[in-house]
Image (cartoon, rainbow, N blue to C red; front, side):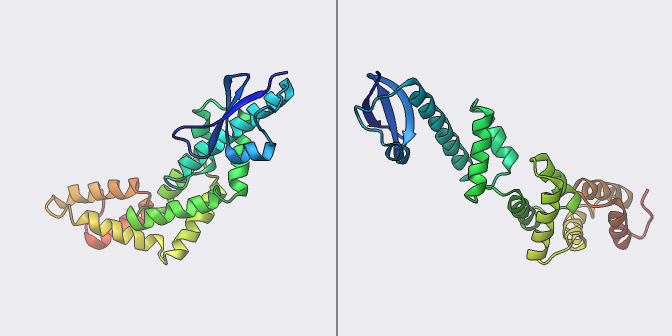
Length: 214
């Protein structure tokens, strides 16, 4: 029966062990999995054991990739799924990984939506409609997007009218040298693309320029 002939540290992957079976490289696993499974040099490996080890190794690799992806910035569940799909992992493994990351607190779409909205409010203000559209494009559910945005707005003590004031004032100051009609049209288009409602944009523009918007 095949047996483990070597357990060697993996270069450039701290805490990982290469398992060799009958002298051939077989599987990479974190050292804690090696200890948990009780693997030692000389351990016998049948086909069932080997299949189990391969499944464990794939899940461990998926967790490694997922955690590394999350270390850059928060991610939605869908973003993690798409990243793991690029590794050509089994769908079952991907689902298990997302479940585990969620259980560990690394994944939470509502918290992700709140963090995303906070960043938008602080760094690149826009309307609620734009924030929600961007969250939906990242796979966040409508409910989680709404809850996250509401939470962020409350935390930052701001409302959409104040965001509109901030964005519109900054943009309008760059259009003062233009013909008023041109400036109004450009400002209207810009603010609409930033996710503010046409009605509120018109009201703000009419406050700055008395002419009707054409």
